[in-house]
Length: 249
Image (cartoon, rainbow, N blue to C red; front, top):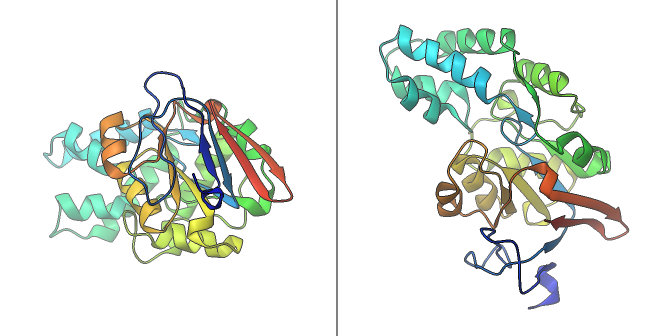
């Protein structure tokens, strides 16, 4: 393996783990602890740093029932991308902005069970503030409410739906986040839980760690995830003169 890839996999790993050796390689089935070098980490919020699954399901289920849609289908579509895109998919003739504001209002008010993902607080606090940020499809007001509820720091570099023109799976959110930190997308590792977000990260040139917190593992791999681990508790980070050294359990 070329040292320029800055990634190494040992020959054996815990069963069921997937690794990929570079952003250009197809996922492999090497097993063992993956060691990754990067300059910055870009985290999705919901399902990655914040467990808001129940709140999201409650809000979108109620919205779907009120409008005569299948709640399961709507909730599945809502994960990992701006809510206005979901509204437009299901109600193309409606006032999408008004519907989106209503969804946002309900989500801001529903914080029951909104907590940090295991290991999330410890992971982000181990990273230098200028070498990580959150890239979420939520609006800024909603993102700030959920991050505070989970005890995750709110950085000036935060990227939300209010900061972009094109949401995930378009690479714009991750490219903008990387640039805001002063890095190229290819220097970053993205952490995601949704296929749309994985595709956005890959399109931005980043390597992607995925969590099966809201989507099946097969969907994450199909979207192009380089590694799949349980959650933040499976990632340890150490900052040094060369950037960030990550180890995946």
